[in-house]
Image 1 (spheres, rainbow, N blue to C red):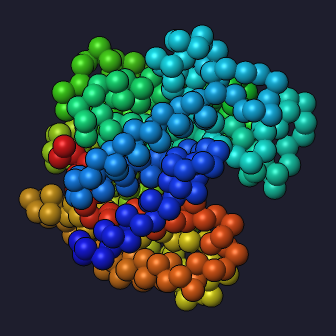
Image 2: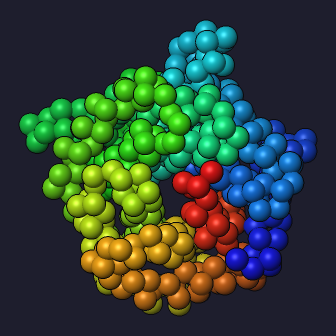
Length: 381
């Protein structure tokens, strides 16, 4: 890890804090996916640089997310915690009702017909955003040895499983998008990797060091359902962000299989196989397009996944089959450096596609710059 990359990350995250109202006078602008990455970045900066301000930013960001995205929108007729809890109980259990995405517009009204284009800009809850926040909370719990954050992550996992998972003639399924109060589905189709992400995240919370068994007992039902849904899963994708997410699941499984001895090596092998297949069908010519025809955060997801695998590959030294898969995937590691260098160039950050998604782009760039340290520290607090 070069000092230059760490300093780049520092500068990006300090600017993000100021521009989104975490520091300074601007009103808070919170978005759950971006903020989950930001929390982990601040923790890594605190760990490496030893400056208390970064831990303070991580803790303040968690509090702000809970008090903004755990409550109803200012333009909604409803008020208070989206869980329906009282003010005092809501503060004690801020994730008990899930967390809003943080989209620009309010959710689609009950009797309105869905508009696929507008739906992307309307609020609600996404399962794969909630899992990102679960991981961020678990990371803080490990970093400062405070079980409250782990409890909040578990409460969120159990609530998300209850709301998003349902039975059908095809067996267990998951909704892709739910309403703010989790009372109705907004998009009924299932996210490609949501069950896998849900399973890996639940296992992560269940097996975390020093957890109290009573706190995680409710995760068992979620794990059983996700195992059922994942049983015949095909995870290959040609989408850069999707490949990155698949690699992230692989990294976490490697850490759990070889450090916590969970009996999920078969799932790890499937994830590694499908990651390799995904990279074979990925259109790498897209990485040569001009900036205005590219989406930085999707490409940076791929870079983060590749950097993450590089950081844990040594754990596979006693498993030749898994190691071979990982080494073959890492033949594409140069793509990660190519993506980092392209989007770190301020000239490319002037294009509309960067500016339209500046928060998520900049935070994910910061993550990619420090991914080796970030992934290595996940299970070693």
